[in-house]
Image (cartoon, rainbow, N blue to C red; front, side, top):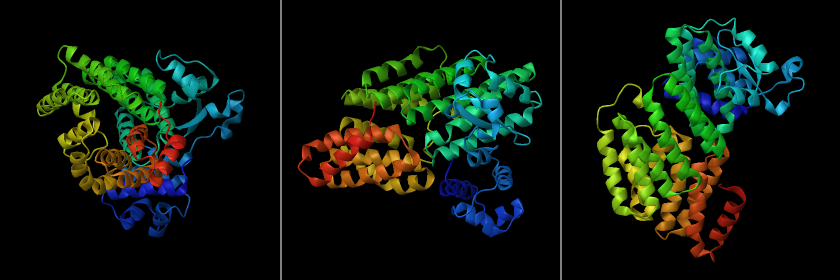
Length: 431
């Protein structure tokens, strides 16, 4: 369960992103302004009725209620007896917020083939029989997806994954009950949730989970005839290679598969070319990296197809993508000074728009300062990143810090470097 302060920070971000004052939210929720203020400051527990009102006001599709409810199977001991409590999580159904326990193991085992197996799932199916699938429910879960994406900028993956998994299970059950004409829309939404779960699993350092969910995203995208998601799955695999191993050649091989798909969209080719630029940079091939990055920007400048814009660059808001892509290549190539000039001015704005992106950017900046021969600044930023990771957790940031530590080894006689590398060794393991 989220702490009151953490949930309050999320609520404040949701409100300010919509340019709403405390007074306006309180009036729409039917309470006094101080109640909303105390909840946002973490001084008062968010009550279920207010969580539902805030979900309505912010159009977050039940995300606030899900985050406020936490994960527990204790209220359903008659159903969960014999199931390890650590395996049970609670999902909130739409239209009334009825809570139902599920087993993670059962859901993950049966989703790929769409079968019902186990006591908890059988009870879940019976409850779903009372929910009528329609277009309003699809909007509810689309809003919920967007709400989870906003929360992912501020919270750790583990705090979000059960809520997303519960929505996937509900969508899968509703799809089987929906009219045939709506089936593809449900599959498409399931694919979006699965891709997000893949990304969160990657950030949590769970390689098998990241692969499992990108496979589900591709499977459901094919059923929805959403070719862009199928193409994007190879981009995601290239990203996983870099995150988990830093193997540039394998990252290139995965991304290149997009270009072998007949009729692949320009946007997916652009994202694949960007990954190839990263891969070439990791191998030290500056010329090929620059050439691939030019290709990426050429493809990304072309008209997009329906559904393409839903994929890629979820956390960078209103940023110059070329600058972000170029600076990542520069860091991989060991060019610290140019990366510092680009990243340093952007850090404050990123901190306001996404704590997760800011944390990853700060880790990249630490590595850039190490490349530039400035160990004191590198250590300072690395410590700040470690502090930020207490909130968001990020394999991407951990990987950057690990590589920063290797560069800083050349100054192993400095006390600040010794302290940092000791902490990195005990706090930031990377597979």
